[in-house]
Image (cartoon, rainbow, N blue to C red; front, side, top):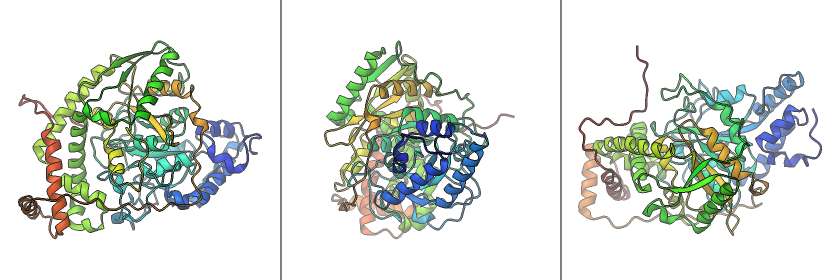
Amino acid sequence: MAREQGTGPMSELHTLSVAEAGRLIGARRLSPVALVEAVLDRIAAVDDRLNSYILVLAGRARAAARAAEAEIAAGGWRGPLHGIPFGIKDNYHVADLPTTGGSRLMQDSLPQAETATIVARLERAGAILMGKLNTWEYGTGDGQVYHDLPWPVARNPWDLARFTGGSSTGAGAAVAAGTALFALGSDTGGSIRLPAAACGLQGLKPTFGRNSRAACLPNCWSLDHTGALTWTVEDQAIVLGAIAGFDPRDPSSATAPVPDYRKGLHEGVRGLVIGIVRDLGPAGDAVDPANRDALEDAAARLAEAGAIVREVALPAPLSAYQAVAWTINWAESFSIHEQDFLARRGLMGRALRSKMATGFCVRAVDYIAALRERRRLALATDALMRSVDALLMPGAFHVAPSLREPGTVPAFTRDTACPVFNVTGHPALSLCTGFDAGGLPLNAQVAGRYFDEATVLRVAQAYEATTPWRARKAEPASHLPEPIMPDPTLPPVPPELRAEAERYAARYGLAGLSPAEVAELALLFDKAASAGLAIPRQPGKEDEPAHVFRVPLR
């Protein structure tokens, strides 16, 4: 099986999209062995400063590539993912491999007994696993980055002094730099879409329940989604077609049929009604001018392609969705990590410890209020969705933040409209909308009706087809700038608030706090309370909270 003539030198094979590589492999004009070797060469060339991988599976990948080549040569081509190298965030289990979650708590974990359903589906489609990708600890945190985890922080291929976005940090870096042709991430409040935005990718959070979460470490059960980061929209359609569908191993998995996402992908948007959301309330004022301009350009391009673009508004300001998302996330994440936090928090990185301390302070009534308000927001947002074919709106408000400026990293994570669709469960895609004057990627968000990822992809493809952005490739610098990120200093804490925090900690089993931890806990009381009190209380005593899990009725 020979390499396609005219595709450039072997060193450039890592720049192929999934669709391009799949067509060449299917036509026997590109060898899976050559493609895997090119990606391994790329990892060797750049990942010492990119830090996209925690674990590279070179031997396993080479064996899989040889098997794929032999199978295809014998006429057994499985489809467009056969022979395609991919990586997975290290919160996905793979049988016979350890899962670390990027945490010191799991650094020496034993090999797993099972493989995550969507990883297994990709491998059945012939895709080749290259390794486990970097991540925030357990895929979560307080939005800040500290250099205190077992693996160094992933760097942005467009500027190594900048962050990739979290929590799927390695996935964003890998696809942008070509150390994987696509990658699996997970998304609780934007953790697929934020790295996609920071790294110039297309990142899709599908409808809640569309993709299985079985054998993926949980972050927040009712907000977690699994999905992919890809270079092109067509690549998203290919990967989603392989991983979507009901899974009895996941109690939140939906039985909705899975369409052919590539069918109709290139039909354009003539006649489609696209609602553009410009006003997100006061929280939306933080959107960078470059991202606002790119959003308007995307709307203009879609209108020129025949779409009917009209301004619409979300049924509530962004801050309402954020308060709900944060409260649910803090509470559910703490319930997952409670025992480790109480007994082994010294092994946690500071970002995770801080988030756990916030969850430690969330009141049950605020959590239930958030679940009730979530139902109301989901129903009201769905009514808006049914009035249009898709929404176009901001995603991440800022470009990739500087690792030299501690305040910009949590701002990148906080200032975003991504949590809207974790709260409601609608599908949403982070779309690369160009680059700013400094060469950093810009983004917008395309969202759609429940289980209508096909229209989301169709709109995104119509925009992508009018732009030159996919021809622009990231090339990491040959040297690694060492950012100095000082730990943020805590503001003064009144003695009475410190005393209250100490009493609360002692009452609920949180012993041995240092003075700095007591001060931080005191401040986090206010953070949790402020978000909880911002959630409206429903007057009806019979209003149930939104439920996530289904059980069989016998």
